[in-house]
Length: 148
Length: 324
Image (cartoon, rainbow over all chains, first blue to last red; front, top):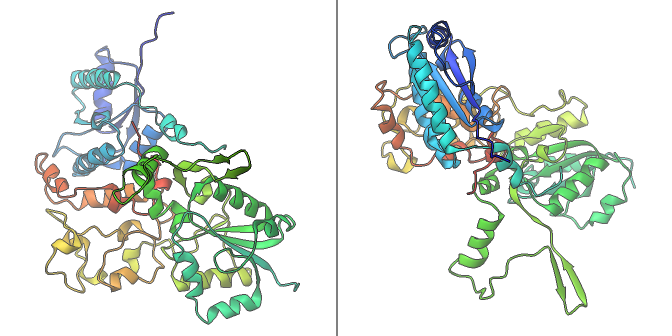
């Protein structure tokens, strides 16, 4: 039997005003991007609570992307700066939990950047594929010697 | 035996401070004893597990359990108490969230045993013996020890918990209010935390010095700060104070002693993960907006798990560190 190739599970939080538009344009332009990237539209990248990201990891995501408007372009003026600061704090926290920092990715994609969206999705997919599965359920499970 | 309602008090993975907190009720404990019979309290009185096994199911009005679950013995007894009790109260931060012993979820059984029984400099253990669950001596004696789990669990991950009394240790007023509510039948909805859900900042004696918008350029530890005024908001000074992500009701004991909040009362009702709630709050007070300057501010924080998860690691979303 041939070994099945690892297909990562990537959750992408995309902001309603820029990055979701960018993904939409990528579709209109018939650009290809990996189907492993699952889009979740939020109103703003600043709406992405760190709890959402950790919950995604806990429930089986191998990677999480947060895409928002370019700096100074935020529909809500500074939501993307909030996302940027949280991202910078989450990276060392992930490190302490022994999760590779590269599993979390933040970038800016405007509503016209269909090509950038497709490129970023491909790059992140490749990176996470290289890192391999995270499988947090197993991390919690393997230490549970008790019967539940 | 009298027909007063019966209660039980048990401890698991905890320091004993919660029992101390009950004794610290001072004369109010006499009112408690007047109203109820304590039929099980291993720390203070001589009862055996068999005394509990002999009780009818639901015979105890309430059990107060402090400490997280670390050993198979603790799991066995809390499951027994659950069966015998009408109400189970998670008493203190360790039972509610895992508490300080829950920081052991940054390790596992193997690494803890290695450090404690093999590496510690003052040990004299040439045969590298670590605790075993079973031991036979000359085929005559069979000895048993409880199993040491890989992780620490808050109580509600093991049994169903009806009410939560937070705090390390719970403040006397929190305990008194809880007892009064039980005895007068005025308990709120099941699953409630018996402390206000507003954040500590709401009742903080220093809230007047908190500016409308806090902006900091570096984080400092309390000892690195030489001009800490008695009335200055800790966050504004760059010291991590868990106030924004912690529920009030503790009486601001730490703040009044000129120490920042460490978060022992746990998150307010609408926050699931206290550490991440605080991380959000901290991120939003970082002053620089430039991409290259933000990491420099965060570098001034050498450790995040310690301040953010001092009490809540086992109840956090990720639960534990991945051991490679």
